[in-house]
Image 1 (cartoon, helix red, strand yellow):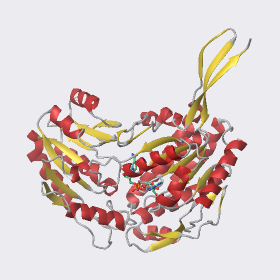
Image 2 (image 1 turned 45 degrees about the horizontal axis):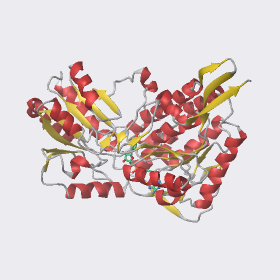
Image 3 (image 1 turned 180 degrees about the vertical axis):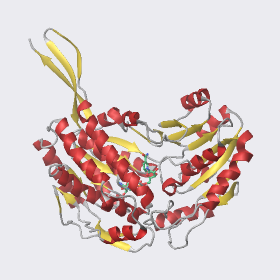
Image 4 (image 1 turned 120 degrees about the horizontal axis):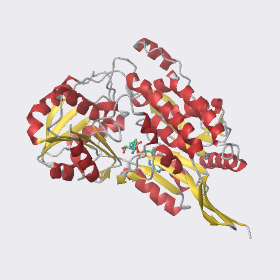
Length: 499
Ligand code: NAD
């Protein structure tokens, strides 16, 4: 457990003391990979190699799926009373919340500042706890029968669930899929992102210690085209749950179709707008919220507000305040508790962003740029742009970095038209003091989650019951809450004829 008073030196010590065990975790224990191919996992800030990780191929995938299948059919977890599964998941949740190692791993591998990684561990732990609490609320339904027949709809686990996760919140996003999958009684094979796989291996060791039986939660490392593809094409995987880019999501739909029609849920990319009306109250507070909207976790957030739409009547007053915040921003060492902005997750990500800016459309103008410490090759300062041209690539494509493009709008219709004018539909935020405006807008916004003002702190307790369904090319399927849990089940119609 952290005291919250750790210094950069304390965190460097935690990081230095980590055991970087990169062996796949299968059937309750770390195992030697069958593949002899590996790749390097780097420190996101220094780009030093942390360790080599196996690029698991078919033999490793088959072994992990077989372990998951055997545990599922044996019923060691799938037939355990949900309340008992919940107890084990809660024990695991306590371990996640208290884990300095997980926070340090996340900070090392993808550059998340420790000041962000620590609360993220708490959020990740809450995801497990929430799923544990919902586990016995998957109610079966009794249908109208007759004196000689009882009709029921019974929820059953899907079976073997493959999970493919991204790197931007390596622990938390993986757990948003692992937790409901396990709570519903499935056995899981997880392939984490090759950029940040080590915390998921740590999660697997914790799960075993918490009491998750062998074979129920397996983690195999590897790259997308090797391990991910083999898992997605596997004939004995019943369901595939994916969070990542839209391009990969499109491939996974093909793999599911080419193989065994496995059930599929996809949480993909976004190009989310934050929409500001001129009736907002304190614009200094507003500027803080807007800035955080696209710089949190260096903008490497699926719901990052990479577009900012501002009412024309407020534009000239608000934009200088936002620009001042961007100019004052500075990236730094992730393990320093004073750092709020880390580097980008890896070289490819940093190069991609630099190339995107170099090729930016002349119709998009740079208004403000922050600073970097100059100490890490993957540092990328926040940027603020403005444009009136909604067709520009910077407006249309997900950039996944700390930047936002501002546009002005003159009325609600124009705000809605611009907001809905990309191929994505993940989230949107509306800022207005008039609830009627937010309410009206929300009904017209094509987004899986819509917020009037940014996330409340502390989060409202009912958030655990909220379900999000992305629209357009941001994916599909119910995620979160009881309906998100039900995603990891299928309904079996049971008919008892008694004549
Ligand atoms: P990515 O699509 O490149 O990779 C995600 C995962 O898919 C990784 O584990 C990767 O190895 C795997 N993969 C890649 N190619 C594959 C293939 N051919 N077959 C099988 N698996 C393959 O995404 P990323 O760069 O890791 O993450 C960033 C993306 O994730 C962004 O687009 C972001 O918006 C999205 N994301 C979405 C949400 C959400 O909730 N909607 C949350 C977080 C991240």
